[in-house]
Length: 309
Image (cartoon, rainbow, N blue to C red; front, side):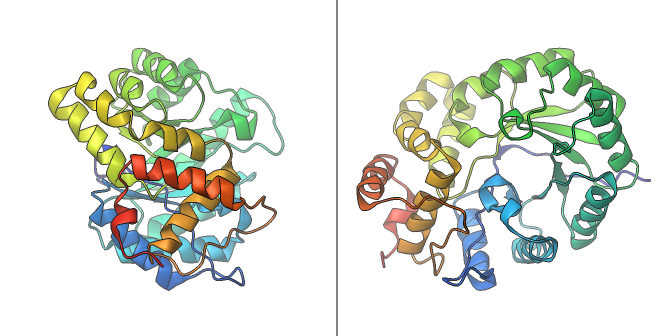
């Protein structure tokens, strides 16, 4: 199949959360508002159906609807990355083809992890999917969830031998060391990007990462840091990042912590209508929310400047 022209990825590309109604249904109108807000915060792209999107709590048709809604609302203003995670090669291909036909610029593809058959099977999975689609692949390396340890050398081997692989999203600590290892071993134009909330943002950029893909809600703060790094270097960027890092670390204590804090923030700002998180989940108490808002104020989040509900 042909390789379509793809936009280069850089900067801060948030994983947008999935707004639900109080009854747990997908809230399309809130999603459209949220997409516009993230772009207004200078997001360099939008990622959907990732871990922060609660994609694993949605059925296939819901995930397709979310992807279609995000792509439609973005309207080519920035690149869109659609997350795909399936235990079957055939179903993963179907989801990637849907994202491609809907207009996604990339698919972020997690390795199959329910039934592990070794690293050759992982390689064969990516090669098989790549042979069936036209848009580029971002490999999602998230060992804490999959239990699959894709070394920097293995990731580079796939990027060197499977041309459709253009980016590796590293979500394994220490992220920056793995990024550096990948850069050394990769012989193609493929580049590392970083997840895990961008908690090591400065080190990641210094080690060759070209973009960060955190959760949404604090995009404006990370864009400030990224642009300072690009224009004035690490020392200036660190001073700004020091105002943001405590909040990132707090939200990153667990997925539930990130879901509830950010959705509460977005609801208070009138960007989504409900802070509903699909179960099973562990809701936060008021003390935890108060602690989060103290750190969010330190980070000078734009969402806090909107009229609060």
